[in-house]
Image 1 (spheres, rainbow, N blue to C red):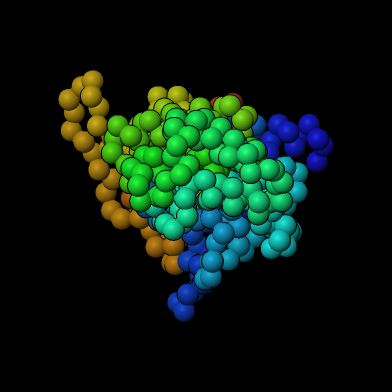
Image 2: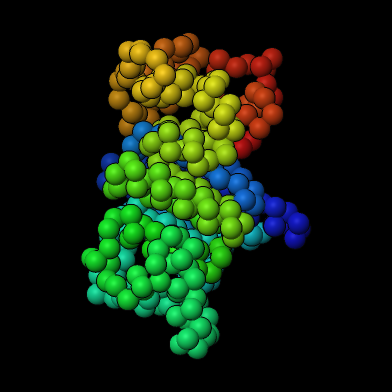
Length: 333
């Protein structure tokens, strides 16, 4: 891979498969997911619980634990495959090249360490050498960049509000200017006002350091504010992906349409529509299209053949039998 490609496309995920091995067989939590993330781009991954979003986040960080195993595919980070690295190489690439903003800051921060020490600990663990004064200055700079007063450095996590703890997590994530930031439902434990503030903070720092970012979540409204591109996940697969405005204005996959129609609309009064049925079992997924058991547009072919992914418009992809050869070209995402 050329240096130019590495700079422009810091993350390339190709045919990623992550299975949870149980006594009853493998649960295919992520089953052939592919996408690319360009420098400075913000990708949102949306879908129901159990669709595989958080499993992707853990796999990107190489933080998955047994019984989860990466069964296939590749994760190309800045030109080299994470799956080829040993444990020490992966440890050093975390935070310096790819960093995570976790779902629960309270659970990720050490309750008996002051914020300053936790930020510095990550830097020292990556062989950053500074004087005490320089370390303190770097901590103050990071806290200020996420909208916190430098005095927060001397506090313990339990002395901070939920929003402040999440901002500290963002500060730690950007402490080494990584190429990719992975935010796994970073606002799920916050009230709606603080959610918007934290998402804006994440966007501001991501733009400031020029990183690519992936945000995982359920809230389509927050995704619309943050992401430049959205991927819709269902049954361990990305079934539609494209620019955020196009996804909202003209959803092409039936699941995407139903997902958007279930959102409240403040501009007009209409009956909310839920999605009928239940998500598929990833232990025994249905044959053919994984969504066919709930799809209002299902055809006979949907029960038999897995749909291929087609490019329907520029940078707009969907995997659905509604779109044949005449409606787009086959691609391998």
